[in-house]
Image (cartoon, rainbow, N blue to C red):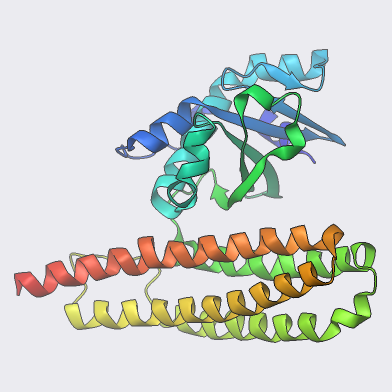
Length: 298
């Protein structure tokens, strides 16, 4: 974990400004109550919205980092929320739990590529009253990906989403060896999941190659937009098929009392459900609205 070190290298005046985005009440409240989790070495620091260290006990190094980089942390916080507002439905589909916890959300940053300043951000929500006493009871709500120097995402960020699902599968295989009582007895499930993933990745990349990286609504024709919408819907269908296989695996694990491993599958299913909702609401939903507008204006 080197997030504190990498953020230490960022200069606030070098971060790009993001065009004004009107945030709804949910996103505004989460912005006010967003906590950071930042790692250095084997230590993971939990920071309050005002950047005081909640846990563990801070040393001079982390205090110095916060003092020098508070403006950077503030800009990163705003970037995270704006990314969630435009390229995710994580807050929307988890709004019930978030509101129950007074909009407290924890953003755990993980450095993906130090050269390009790309981060994976895992999100959790937790009761503010029990944050210190029962921290392990936090609720996982999903993950997103952020390039701090490039806000606009090619293909709505679909490539990163699919690559993440493949990477997570590899991590699941490693955990299975340690957590399952008899890993070999679940070999058929892992093989099926691998086949669904390979099909998702291969077919999706072929589809994306045929689509524009960004859609210019001033130039695109209605018939082309309809075809683009159909192609993204096809990718979503592959996600739905994979989700069905994961749900079956999860049930099988519960029935076989594989409690030490099933929670990882539950998280994976959560990421899949978020991805499917993202397609339905943000990608296909947005495209369908634009198609209706174009058709009605012709």
